[in-house]
Amino acid sequence: SPFVYKNYEKQFNKKSYTFGIKTVTYYPVEFSLELAKNRVNGHYPVTFTINGKTDGGEAFTQQFTLYVKISDGIDPHSIEPGPPREVIATGPALSIDTRHVYPGMEKSYSQGYLPTVAGGKADIVLPLLSAAVTDTLTCAVNLGDPASSPFVYKNYEKQFNKKSYTFGIKTVTYYPVEFSLELAKNRINGYYPVTLTISGITDGGEAFTQEFTLYVQINDGIDPHAPDPEQEPFPQPRLMVAGYTQDGSYLEAGEKTTVTVTIKNTSSTQTIKNIKLSFSEESGEVLAEGTGTTYCTLIGTGGSYTWNLAVTAMTTAQSRPHPAVINMEYEDSCGQSFSVSDRIILKVRQPVRLEYEEPSLPARVTQGDTPPFSMSLMNLGKSVIYNTLLKFEIPGLASGGSVLVGTILPGESQTGTTNFRVGTEVAGEVSGRLILSYEDEYGERYEEEIPLSTTIEKKIEAAAPANDAATNPTAQLPRWIALAAAGAALLSLIYFLANRWLKEKRAREEDEMRL
Image (cartoon, rainbow, N blue to C red; front, side, top):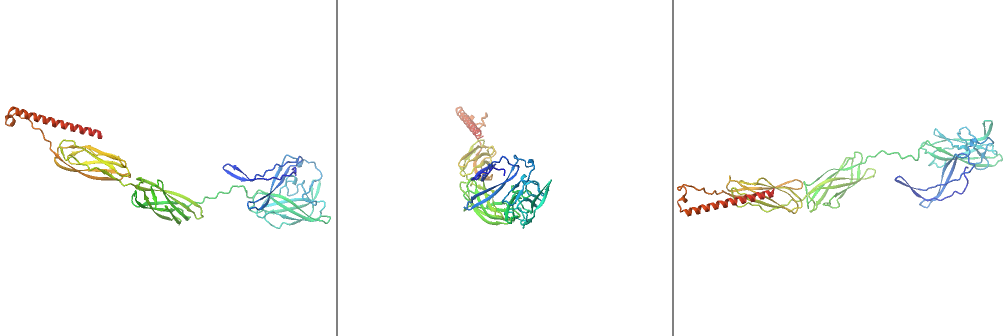
């Protein structure tokens, strides 16, 4: 041996070590063996015997053999020729010829001989020397544990006689113990011990038994450290929401409806089983009846399942599309669990409540006048009202176009104002309508008609003065009466013109404010 013999017994505890993102727990069995100064180059086996107890309290012993390569010692080929050295393996009867290379060997034992592995066989050559034995030897082979051995088990017991072999000018007499061990097809790479048990009788008539252990290196088998072969991806069966409907176009706030969801198995090869369906709505304003879950035993290949789910919209639910999630938990035909989800949209709508003060026109208007008009609109609902518009259709009255009130927020009011211009083409009682239109948050249009009526009076023109006494009776009256009548007419005309100017000015100002 190239080692200095000492007591190398040690104890080891488990520890952890991280490789990248993976952490491994192991026993770090480590030794530093001191080498002899006169060590000879070669491969030398070192056997570790491990003792311990399992977690169940059972004692165990296990051995592991490693080979140490010595390359910084004495070259065995540089030793001067001399008498062959005999290394006694076990007992005095037989010894291994460690110096010579016999047929079937690539190296001598001192150079680190290993059995040859080729063609599905392991060839073992064990040259034994003995000065005390000349009779036939019997050799039995122990191949170790069949569960992990790379060999095909047979009866390999053989007998060997002494023979001679010449190396150059020297002839050696030895026992050529040779075996050809058949290897299993599914052998695993590694070093495996083979124990040869030699029995015989010495020349003195004494029976003996000796054991010699050799290690066979298998390197043409399965690599135990090779990564597991990648398995072909197994197609995952998939569930999906194939369609859904809800009773009615909208779910009114505070009301209940039924949502019908169709679940489809898209796989054409696998049945899906143990299916749990769950409903959830993101805002919490749409609630499912009960737990919002259901169970289905299985859905066959390409089949579907229909879930009728009752849901209720809270009275405070916002008027808008509400996303909801259908979660599907299931198992494939092999029992592997999966979970997927799909989204559906539920249209929730708040009732539209637009109230207004009953509008009216002045009982009488005069041709050429510009009477004002206003209407207060109140949103008493919980949704926004858009594009509120007032449109008038009244004979003899022109508003200059429709009045856009616009958006009315929940709980707020807006006022629509305009000024009519009374035409001169129509007189007497007239009636028409006010068309009130608006839209909800889904763009649906609403329209109401409100009747309006008034009486249009003709405009009274002031009388023109005349010079002819026959045509102007006031000319025959006393002068002071004529002057008084003329003054009164002038004052009436000034009042009429001033009043008309003030009305037109006020109308223009209101139009400007409205615009």
